[in-house]
Length: 582
Image (cartoon, rainbow, N blue to C red; front, side):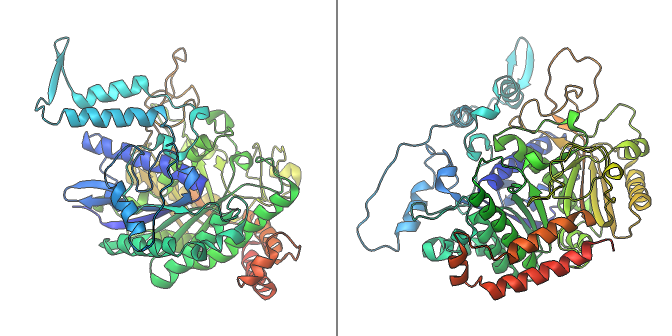
């Protein structure tokens, strides 16, 4: 029996769509495990995919990006040379126009070799549809076509970071024609660094606004029991304004449906990974701050994520995520998002009373008192044949922190606040050495996966609850132990994990041969804690700042005037006060 507690996902901006491609590839890999009878049966993929008869078809997702970021993916969710419904989609756009139509055709973007091979395999499958042989013989042994294809894929697929130019270069799933939406280019809009440009997305293109709202209602209305909205958004550019606008729309029309908001921005005022000048860096930092000020009013839980150059990693030898290409860092975010959201996708048999997006957001935010949370992970959990959970919990260290923080949890590599401070990029060994107080946790949601067996699953969950209660001294706590490991698709970046990990994710003794793990164990946590207080204060200062930037006139014209800034800053200061330990 299917769960049908549907989740509608939004991907707004280039990096968010990089994350989305990895996220959906992970889901597709999980579906393959289910088809082959290798899954634990704990996860119900119908929460994320449309149900078409007995089959799960398209991901339940709406995305928005600048057209030039889509690569070889058609506007209608198909590859450039996949005919399908492409003509139908173009007809929908031009149907309301009564004048003459001039068609401008540019050379199509060349497929990434991985996509080209997927298309070739689809052609081969179509040619084999009339062939009723389910098994083939080779060297006297019978093997299914699926096994042959999988073995062929493992030998041939190798996606290197420097070969990926677009998020569609490694996307395995096919999007629905109602999924993809494009921002209009060429109107002088600075979508890369300006929140204000995003405020004009509706007036620039009325057709896009109508199409977006029509498709939104279509996706929602086909759900039986909509559980929540999962939103990934680039917040330091125009997509921050669009994400805020979408949040407001969702809150107005679906007030009882929670919004889980992942907002990603670079740490512009502390580091400069994009080599921007000072004015651009300020502009983008201000965009991220204003996005949070608006979106946090409508979302049930807002989780800020920094660029990978500002992540704190206490176990840096286990995971390699530094690369100029977003292909690698977005894979880390997707893996952690998949882990933290597992309870929301639990099969009916494995559901607990708290396994719902609303309950998670309500618990972590303490019914709205703490509307922003940090995201951290232990990726991977170094798993041995004889794994002792209490010992691992005691010695696990701080893990990988993706969110801003102003206090240390232990020795690590970097510490970013998100907007710039004297804490950022420090090389420290401990909080005590620097005279910084340890952060106080107010609430927590944690998921451990891939370490438990069926007979120890409930015991392991109890151990997690007991361990974190003793460590954090909090009652607003929910933990899960899930047997299903993180299954890694062949599109996952190579050499991401330590060479100590074998194909099954276990520690191996023989390091001579290079192998890529096909699955790993992980733990991920959402926490509302005092380490966010400095970031909240700086965010309120950026919103309140009267410094005249290139967008200030446009801000005022669109209702974001001085009175609005002061009101938002006061609200954020009030939120900040709740995160202080005083």
